[in-house]
Length: 423
Image: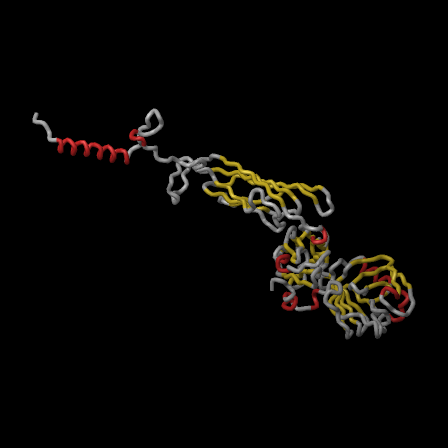
């Protein structure tokens, strides 16, 4: 075989090296015993520490069934000073949630140890969990989250955080009426009062929920920073079942104040029982379920002490009620005991028995503002009325002031609705 020229040999050798290099770019290099590739090159970098199995360096790649589920909470692990109006949530990606639990330990405004758990709901698709309640002040929370990926591999993660303190003076305590399980009259509003002012009325009202069966439209009306009522468009239908949820725990009340707790109640509307008092004639007519059941001779407030006209509601019943001139600022000295008394205003008006005024019943108005009647007639009403039964008074030139008792029915529904923070 004829010998190749030196130029030919060099060309052949160069082709071989080039081929070897090309092959190395498309294949995993074979490591040498010393841990390096032939030619002294290092192997290409594999997955970085903490990467999911099967991940690539392509940041746009989609999760694979073997990627672990990623669990993220709305409050960071180790966070401090978390506001009590926070509503904690958890999100799952590359998988779905199995279970979330949250518990807390802390101290209340009186320095007493408190602890508890907070429930929540997982979305139907398993992507999120949202707590049922906001947070307690000065507490340490532990949030445990569990989820699974497409291969049903479970991952559990725990986070802890601490909430900010809230001074007891800045906690708004709610009181809700009527009482649970009570039966009340057709005019009875829902009455919610607070021990300290609420400036952020809109936020509070968004968390007030009234449900009635049968359903009837209604609206909230703020009388002040500490009093809000709810009434339906028309008198409640007899037999209506009503439930109220004031979900106010941790709600921002403004001015650095927060709702101290959530409260609820449920009550039933009784039969229709309406008392119509005409102080121009000094007679009252009593209607039950729309039928006249009694006519009563009465005597109302004399000149200078006129009884208020308008729709008032029975607020409560008292037996052997002591009445004195000091209670209302009257100069005339008296101390009287009404055996049967039914309050209808905050300012001191009652329907009551007044045997000392017998000669004026059905004739003239001679009291200091109350509507008096015989002991027998007062006993008739006392034994039948419910808190919330309407007392419709006419025949005087003095009207009932807004917020003086349960005065909710002295405005049209349209006007009443203007008292809502959400209107």
